[in-house]
Image 1 (tube, rainbow, N blue to C red):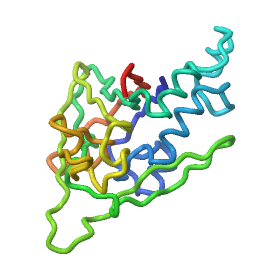
Image 2 (image 1 turned 45 degrees about the vertical axis):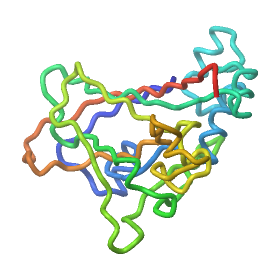
Image 3 (image 1 turned 135 degrees about the vertical axis):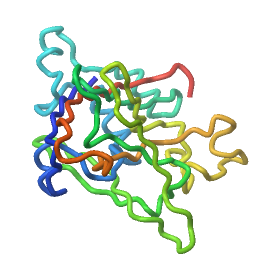
Length: 225
């Protein structure tokens, strides 16, 4: 698991400074790509690099890697299903989340040709995320968005950052596209990832309390593909 604590100001900064100071805040994005998701899973089965936050704990526990290399190998060979899932919640016991809240895109309203890959250069590795552009085809419906207003510390959002069973991960043009003769992986309509962003909610003024939140990334590996 990878843990990040984020404390935000009431007045969101311009995009460029927000990205530098506190991560992907006011930026519509997905955390992994078709290249970076399996690569990151493989990284976690190898000895930790300098940028891995769990490196000190693994050293104390005398462990060579966070994940079992044999299980990861099976997942990368599609013998097991795997996913990266973030657990996002407020850590403010006094105030509900007002600005900026977190919003998520309906996966069935996006397509591959709307995604733009960008690279994040760390000291010892290169990550990849997706930006998303406006709907590509004229006359096509706009992206659908969802968010939970005024979340409390007792509520959480599970953000699926990558799912190897998702339609896009399996080669479809979108998470709403038919693949192998079935609609989006069958009745469960499995999405590949959650495109998300913080945003300024006009319902609240500049005096809204600053958001305080925590995000923990979990790796989930199933026994079956």
